Image 1 (cartoon, one colour):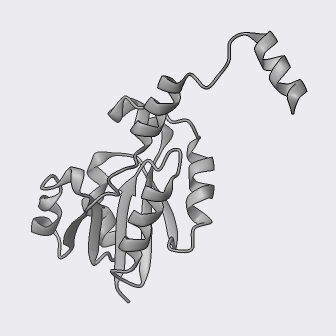
Image 2 (cartoon, helix red, strand yellow):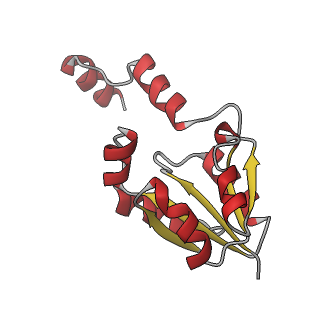
Length: 149
């Protein structure tokens, strides 16, 4: 059985994430997703997620390409994960190109950088939502919109 692993935050899940997971799974038989914990995101990445770890885990576990979701608690766990989960291939988006080559050098694991879905990203979604000012601050406008529906 060929085992694949990928890492990520997977906040505000979108079709780019699904494409990545589908392509990762197509490289083997069993896909492990190491999901960044809320603490790791905040303390190491200075990143606040919209959905909690448990909600993001629940979403990932419902995707047919994902066989196992594990917590990513630190940058340093990758080498031990390769051994612990008997991983054959490490997969990550190509925006990380070259940054995880050390895994192939230190383990018997192939490293593959997959091209991301170009027109979508969580960062872009958040920016678009903020730019479009989708929340009306004037309650009378909001109330009139509700009455019309």
